[in-house]
Each structure stands twice: as structure tokens, then as C-alpha cells.
Image (tube, rainbow over all chains, first blue to last red; front, top):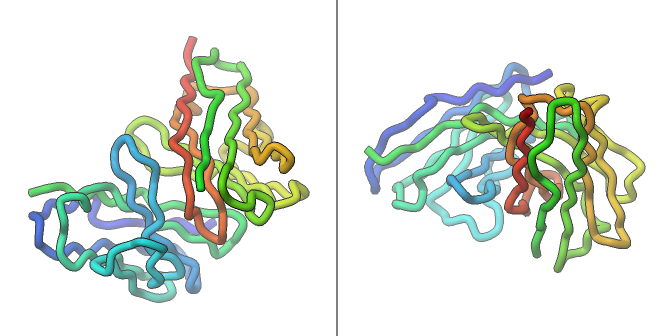
Length: 108
Length: 115
């Protein structure tokens, strides 16, 4: 069973700042890594799939990178609507999935 | 494109509940479907997947043997039948479309397990 670890647990930043969120897996997940955004009272939203591909309608300030076991979601310049919880997810054992524990991005 | 869950509610420990998720405005039969939950104060947890034709189902260890996922393609619906519910099954339950990843989600239905 793959375990995903996300860091930091909470990131406190101001609008306009750059955010870098980390996701590490206990073993290689190949390219099968996605990122979701989840805001209170809303459904989760797919941001990035297969490490670096933006989902439909996702702004260009969101980007994904990494390989093997280390992955990063970068938000180049935080907008007020970006303050949320972000989860990574792997599907290397599809059709089973694993979510990471999440990183909360708070307004500083 | 829309998913709408229903069927949540208050149930006693050891009880059963069946959740429904109705899809609209996309070709339901083209997709695997998924159930995911979020317990209060916790993160997202993948629970179960079902193949387009309903012939394959996969479950997280935490629900295997207690939860059953099914679908009715004529009704554009996917279901989650939950038995032997426990307090730690209290959560908001989402259905999601599974096009390799979960690119469409419902709004969730709340299940509370308490006496």
C-alpha cells in the first residue's frame, strides 16, 4: 500500500505570494499523481493530473512538477480564491486510489 | 454535467443505509464511478470504484465487506449500500466521475452514525 505524505500541514501566505506544496509517496507512483483543491462547503476540484497536466478550466498560475516519489504543486501568485485545502492523489494501483492528508493554505 | 447524491441521514450503529448518485448531461456508461468520503475534520478518503458495466468493483480496506457499490445504467445512477455502520463512518459522502481521475463531483450527502 502506498502512503502519501504532504507538507507542510499548513501554509500561511499573503495574496500575491508564491505557494509550493509538497507530496511524497512511499514508493514510486510513476506519472499517476493528481492534485485537488477543496474549499469548505464545496466539492473537491481536480487541478492537476499525471503530475503536470492542468485540468479543464484551471488557471495557469497552478502548475505541477516532480517525478517518482516527490511532487510539487506550485501556485505562482496566490489569489484570494486559492485559500483552501489541497490534496495529492495517486492511482498507480488503479482502479484503487490513495489521497494524501492535505495541506491547508491560509491567509497570513 | 452534474452528479447529485441523496440518501444520507442519521442511522444507529450497526444499521444500514443506501446512498444514491444520479448523473446527468454526460454519457454515464462511458465512466467508472467512485465514492469518496470526508469525515469531520479529516481529509478525503477513497472508498470504492465500479466499472462502466458494473462487472468490477474495488474497495478500500476500511469498508471492504461492509459497503457495496452498484450501478443502474438505465437510471444513470450509482449506489453505495452500507451495512454494519460504525461511528467512524460518519462523514460527507461524495460520488465522483472517474475518467482516470475524479474530474466531476457531486455536492455530497451527509451520513451520521449515532445512537
